[in-house]
Length: 320
Image 1: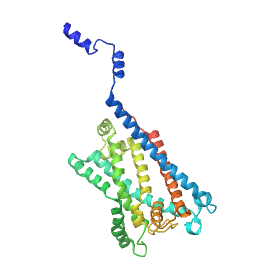
Image 2 (image 1 turned 30 degrees about the vertical axis):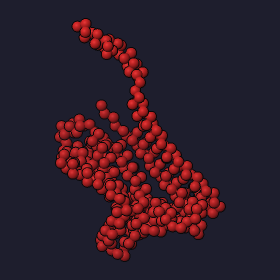
Image 3 (image 1 turned 120 degrees about the horizontal axis):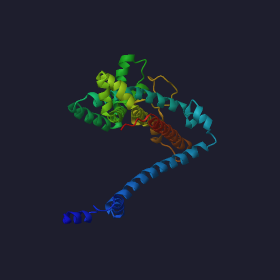
Image 4 (image 1 turned 120 degrees about the vertical axis):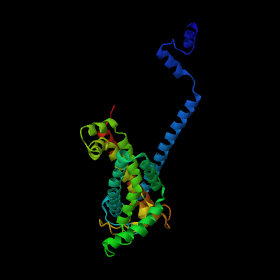
């Protein structure tokens, strides 16, 4: 017995719990300290990179708006974007970007939420083992492949259905549909994570009250995961707005102020790709206009992220 007490004292068994915790905190842990420093540096580097990108956008955009030919009012309300003749209205680029993103989310959201509900509520282990890797493979396909898929498959399909006179060869509809396919894995994965986080007790309570599996999924689980689903939706919108190669190849190569999705129109990202790939002189007004469009895109995605965080905080459900 004395040996047991001596051993317990040697391991701190007779010490007060607060004193033992204090000794553990004071004990040197070089490995843990190195990991903590590495993680801090990683976070700091990511923040510095973001600040550097914002600084470059602001600096180059300032040069654009300082030009006597440019005004904020014309940039925000003008209906023609042709910098080489002094027309700097961003509305044609903004409108086509919103049209393509809207079509993409009309494709990605219903399918993504449906896939998430199936994986979370209905799928067997075998089905999940097949579908999850398939979605990950879809997310890993290069976007340039999606762009050629839109141009060579989706566009001919739309023209055969709606008519060649209605659907142009380069159109926003095919770009939006394929971007929806591109965003689908992201939306479905995030929604499935949100649905899986809902406690099983809520499902069991719904089934115990006589609800079917479909009613339980749509009337109990989905509302409980609303904040996560909304966050996934807004992240998907941000991803659709920032997509470049699909719209550069399939949507069109000229600014066009139209809401007709079957017509060609250039998005903000597509315009940046086309202009930056041309023969532009450094510090010219055409060159600086690229950064002004990039800054507008940054504020659009930043606004969406702020809205996403507000929605998550407002509708977050906490369960014990």
